[in-house]
Length: 317
Image (cartoon, rainbow, N blue to C red; front, top):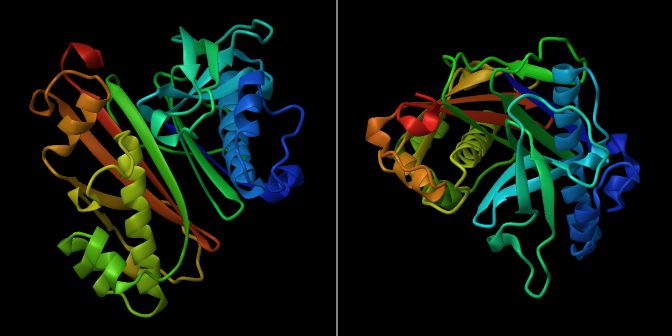
């Protein structure tokens, strides 16, 4: 299962002003917060971490029966070359049981090299990395986070956390990506620059406000897919084609559940992504599936993508 949480800033007013609640951050994260220059940037950063930590806290609580303190969970980076987030139980925190599959990591960076501010040191953390895939996005006082845990026992309902079943077979690697965007028109020049021909035809079929909705969903889904690939907006976005299903029939005033997004990838893009992540098998030796979904949440669009890879010695086969 993929669990997701939508976190409004209104539930924690101090975050909206760029101030961290005492219970939220680890020492390394406090160091990183101090490096952010504006209240707006600090507020966005804090809101994303609040969503991610609350979701990870619920995951740990369901796995072992005890919730960890939020300031013991650090949102770090997979490496200095990767913007993919990971969750680490800080070695400075009071020890506690953790889910099976957690492993020790040393000096994990909180900032990827492309995101560093010149002249600032990179805050680092050591501790036990949780066995999950995580993705975070934020927009206009809202943050979205999704989490996938292999073999997790998270069955108990939680009114604040929802789930979607990707239908993947057991085993292998799963990487998730999310994005949240306000519904807004996209200019013709934007669509021409970033959308593939099939996407432009799809969006062009919509009328009125539905065209803004479909353009927003398409763009957001691309971002979610590129996050699931752990490469972000570093490649030509036309190498990913996202066609939202059932969107043209939906009333813009209704907030439906998740609908499918049909995803097509450039044949070389998965190989490029695995190579950047240090995973050696060529894509043609692997079995893989990229799935996508979208839904409305008021004036926002939420998108979620999940990559499932099996085959070869690096993916449990």
